[in-house]
Image 1 (cartoon, rainbow, N blue to C red):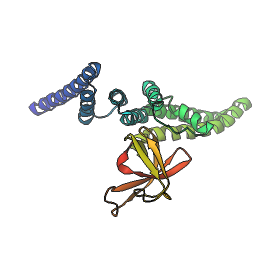
Image 2 (image 1 turned 120 degrees about the horizontal axis):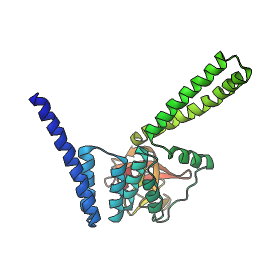
Image 3 (image 1 turned 90 degrees about the horizontal axis):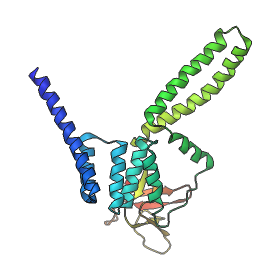
Image 4 (image 1 turned 60 degrees about the vertical axis):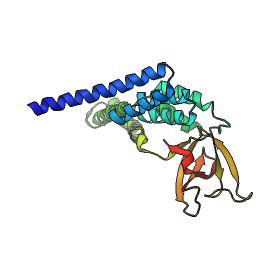
Length: 257
């Protein structure tokens, strides 16, 4: 019994400590001590675990500290945990307007519609929606098999066909949102300026095309390559920006989301 009480007291102390860190971080942010707020929010995440809201708060602190790349990373991570975090989405879109020479979004119309649908609910909500649709699907199948009414049978037949496609799509969304935080194929530039190069090495001639990109730019990592022959850079990423530009970036200039 004494051991159980000791464990409970320890858990209560840890929870209170984490809550105290978050409160201290909020206090530091309110008094415009943004570096302290960043440190305290980070400690709270390390001690208590991550959440969409605390990542949103950390992103705000980074933005106020003029670290646009880090702020965008936090907002992106907040949205991967909870795509319905509207405040994080609004701030992310605002901070993106501050990116110098920001690449234009060349996503297709259907891709943008899909993103809007995904951002409507949290991963847990999509899972519950998928369960509800599965129950409805079973109901339409039962109506087709067991009903003696022709109209009801037709409704059950065509309804089941529609529900199968809708159910598969919702399952795909639930799977996508649930695994988004573990997907580290996207990254953000965290230095003021870096170069997108045609070769995985520091530029050696004018033939190697170099395109400058700026802090906050989002890239998709396709591959990586270590370069032991280049003493200044240990690793390069083969990256794509939107669906057009592709090249190599110094891995130390970006941080994975």
